[in-house]
Each structure stands twice: as structure tokens, then as C-alpha cells.
Image 1: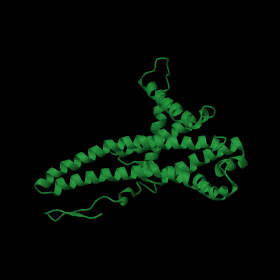
Image 2: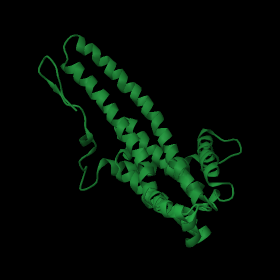
Image 3: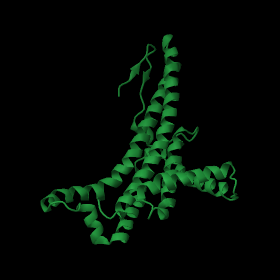
Image 4: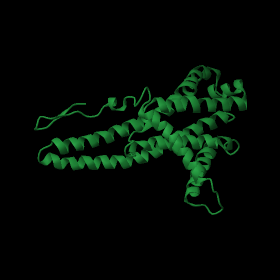
Length: 260
């Protein structure tokens, strides 16, 4: 990206990917690491405190917890995994949704202002170390290794010649690309959104402080753009958390299905 030069001779340098490489706060501990720990504390505190005094007529806290549970249970797990097997995966799906959502929303929280999932390592670890082993283990446990591999790699009823073409593609998709694409979806959305917010915000500040005459007025539009992008990004953060949990449940449901 280029640089903007104003009449005063000041040069504007737009934000780049380097802005996401935050230095360690102490030792090897970085801000995103602390945010991940903070998200776990927030989620645990929310569910524990809001559900400690359950009643027939729910209060506000209990209503929020029950709504979150119902959403993860019925709108994601039951729909994607199926009525016969979904219940034991509800805690996992709810935890994935809550964890990704809170870490995404950190990007618009004052002072914190960093979406943890904009670091590819976090969603990739969540996908490859949690979701990936769970759905393969669930499928192997239900069907046995041989039948599970046949279900995943060899669509039933296809001619033998088609198997030679489809098996490598299915193996690459199911065992290599699925965890990568699951992680990249949320990473790309959080990275691009945060970069745009930074661009609008830094541009507005630069135009206001270094611009002359009409240029200072233009800074207001950049501030408005940053505000609009913040609201849009908040919506995207929620959607991406939903998609991550939805696809995770979908993979589990596909692994448990009798055939594909």
C-alpha cells in the first residue's frame, strides 16, 4: 500500500499485517495469549454465576444462559448431528461457540481492542487439536476404522474406476483441508475486519491532526467509516462464531452418518 502526502509534507503510512505482530508483554507471553486466558475466565464466570440459583421463573442471568444453551443445543447440535447422537456433543458445541465469540468480540472492546482469532495459530489449534480429533474419533468409535474410512473416502454405489479418482480427493478434503478451512474462515474475517477498522481510525486521526482546511473536515467521514465498520464487524464476529460451531457440528454429524 502506498503513502499519502499532505501539503504539510507529512506522510501517512497505512496499517499492515505487521500491526498484528504484538511484542511480548513479559517473557514470551503476548497480549493474544492473555486474552485467550481472559476469555476462558469470562465464559466460566458467566455460566457459573448466571446458573448458580436456578428457578422455575428465570431471572435475567438464567434467561441468558438458557437461551445460549438452547441455541447451541437445538439450533446447532441437533440440526447438524441428528436427534439420535447430538446430546453428548452439546457441551463441546456450546463451548466452541462461546470461546470463538468472546475472543472475536475482544476486537471491539475498548482497551483490549484485539480479536484473538486474527492470529491464525489460535483458530488452527482449535480446529486441528479439538474439532478434528473429536469428529474422527466419534466416527471411528461408532463405525469401526474400516467402515468409517469407507464412508469417508468411498461414496457407496460408485463405479470402481470413480473410486480411483474420488478417494485421493476425499482423503485430501476430509483429513487435511477440513481443519485448515475451518480455521481460515474465522481468521480471515477477523484479520480483514480489524485491519479495516484500524485503517479508518488511523486515517481519521492523521487527517485531523495533519490535514489543512477541507482535509480536516474529511476526517469526520473517516471517523464515521470506522464507527460503521465497528458495528458491521460486531455482526460478522457473531456470525463467524456461529459458522465455526455450525461447521464443527456438521463434521461430527457427517462422521456419525451411516453413509455419505
